[in-house]
Length: 334
Image (cartoon, rainbow, N blue to C red):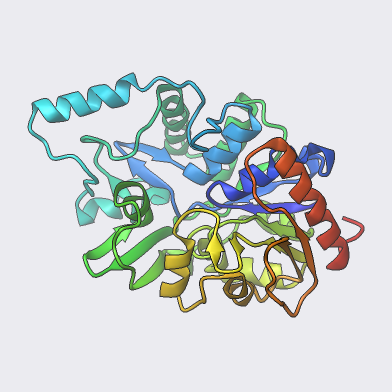
């Protein structure tokens, strides 16, 4: 068995076309939940859902978000009502008292549904409504995610990093904001002072996650700060990585990032925004997969290939490099 860590779109792209290298049933994916929000009363788990939708053959592979061909009639109607009522659009945080009230999994990240700032498709919303209803019935996020995976015919085990709330908060000169406001609404425009993983001190990885981390681990080409940071902020999670073979795929080609705000967030967190910075952020990694154009010299084994991802053929190519790197990391029997 080999376990993949996922945040954003990097790991779903990596796993696209991976079946020739890794058996889906034996390659669980542990997903970041620091990006999760409660929006208009429904719990949205973007990184979990991207993996579920990708593995279920539903993902919009142009945007790598949401469901391909999904309608957005409810979303559009919500905006029509807000406009007609003269209500301001954009992220509308619920009052401070409401941030820690209600369901625990939604702590620190609760938004009003007025003029919702994240576009939710109609079938996509049905998934969130079902998730929220099951959570309110008393099921944990791990159990709920497994149920949704069954509903979407997903063979690969998909595991939230924790059943406890962890919220990624970006601190800027304009004030603190949830990562989804920073990235989706503000398009990463504000300067960043620091990044906080609120709730991580009290959060624990689930038993299912710790069992998965007993196997060799692959860190996909995700943002080291906001995709892996919430996981690593849990002491038990980081300790587990230190005791198992780990291969990381760099999201950079030297100092150029493939996509997203990783460079800005790494610099704000004290890391060089580069492959060398990723290596510094991942002291637990035993080997790396780098792009053929990335000449970064590391003190750990390196396998190089074209790491650009987007098609199943790309995913298979990079997964073959990952398999070679696992061998070099001492996980040849994985």
